[in-house]
Image (cartoon, rainbow, N blue to C red; front, side, top):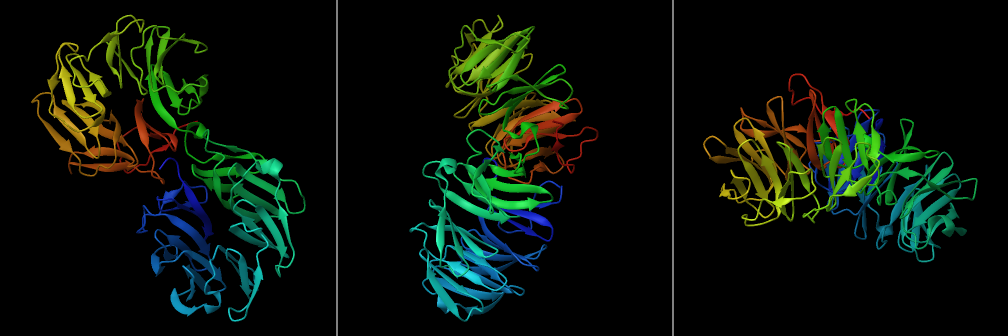
Length: 562
């Protein structure tokens, strides 16, 4: 899951909850970071609608199950439910065309609503006196669940997405027709759609009315207008390129800040100023690479959002390479080389201009640059090469390998090790003139040295190859996902993974243990030891850092200074 695909929000007992698309349920308590609710049995499930009363949070989970959560434990109330609604002390669930009523306090069966038989429910909303059920083209409403009245929806055949009641009006949001407004008796209807603001062929998702302002999420972003006015405006949203327009869910104001969600996570801020993507990291964007050179640290953003430099340990950052995204870096004196897409760029030390390397034999993405004994090495999907003239020219190293698709490589004073994208680990003692197959057939993604071992990260495991005995063993217990990077911190082996958090190898139990999972499933792709701290680059959170001192796996990674 890239970022956090939100599906719903709810506030219960002073905490803000968000349901996600395949990631379970999460909670935010005041100013504390988001936390994943691990008591739930549906950690990897889709969490849809959520409704709240004074006693519990009710949520629709996965393949149509309804749970009651009292802040401590979950109770399954009903299965095969498509939608849920609350009215006074009653919980109403919809299964296909059948409606069942439960006691919300006890979660026990109460009755069925035969008056609603056949209604294809799209939304429900209640006031202090009246409960409304909206179908595809009909709305039914009642004050006592016994006597029902009905009315036709005057929404021009549009599918109902959300409904809100404010003072003496009912607001009905439709899929493409926008907002329709009617009175409490559903008699007089009017459409409120501003094509100039919403653009052509808009698709609407959710609505919220708060303090006299109506908010809409739509394909195109987040919009609002005062109920006493007539002009719609678009709320500024800052986030990753191509994602900020895909807003879906609205939480409203919590702890003085406005929260919304979309396919790329949770957004927070002041609607009068703008919202930003809530992630605990550098510039709230995807970080794809970290590099350290002396007292300088470089952090590279995805989607060509730039490369940032810090010279004070991450306290402040400066944009140095605008519009670029570097997968790796190498420095020769005043010349800096950066791998960007399928090019090797050469910069002066000012970072204000660049030229292409004269001879770059690598044409695929993800070029890895390394320096060893004043020699530049470059590996990627089209081979492994070295240069003795700072990247002016390159010589092939891997002609004798069975494949030229290099996923990772590593050097020490005596040997060169190469992992191939389609599987295999090889060693050369003569700079690529000949190769020894180390008999590791699995696909590998990362390499590092740890004590007397070569450690190779693969899919759901790491492989430890002894350089002394030329024997290897697989270390898979406790590991999930691809091992994208490896590092040694305070003589402990640490791994960054694809959606399984940051792990460390516990020699006593001979297993991988969680160092940091984060509140949302996410991709960690780069590790860097900075002084006495370990940094991890995330595609969701930015940079996080584990403070130095005695290695304590129980201490979570904290936000690096920004």
